[in-house]
Length: 137
Length: 97
Image 1 (cartoon, rainbow over the protein chains, first blue to last red):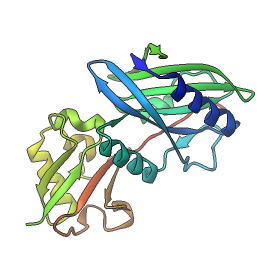
Image 2 (cartoon, rainbow over the protein chains, first blue to last red):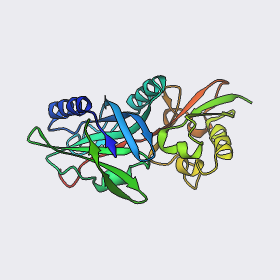
Image 3 (cartoon, rainbow over the protein chains, first blue to last red):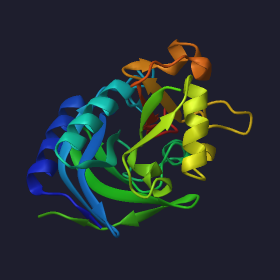
Image 4 (cartoon, rainbow over the protein chains, first blue to last red):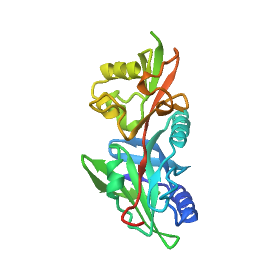
């Protein structure tokens, strides 16, 4: 289960709506223990894929390292990745699956005509993604 | 030999008993990673391919410099250097152009 506090979700929705029609991406920072992941904050990152920014993202490693360092300093860790699917369902694509890592939550936000239409989270289980429930506190 | 700190990303901490950093010895990035593999069995296969090259979805940084922009695994390391294993984070919707 992914615990996504309301203020974190609202912040994400603002970033994602503002970034439309391009994909936006970033990281989830918090704690993860025995199948329960809590995202205490979200971090926005730059998308290095400028040629296909509408349907691809390639998160800037410098932003990853900065977020990782800040998380460690707070006794937290990177627990997942978020990105938007502009005018596309909040389901992982083959591109998402090929690049995914086990142990992280992958939060995908469908944004249709600039408005958030669906928020779903997935975890890699062997070769495939399995949806996990989201609890908004 | 130089003492090197290797930062381990969350998805690979299952190989390090949960540790977020592992200290190894090594004069080059490749040597440090090989020694990491000896300390933490299984981790190296997630970082290097069978030819001993970095896997496509893995980046390794020395400080804030990407190994790919240096001499790759042959990059020499000073004592006290920090290597960061950085998972490539990529994806996106597809099927549209």
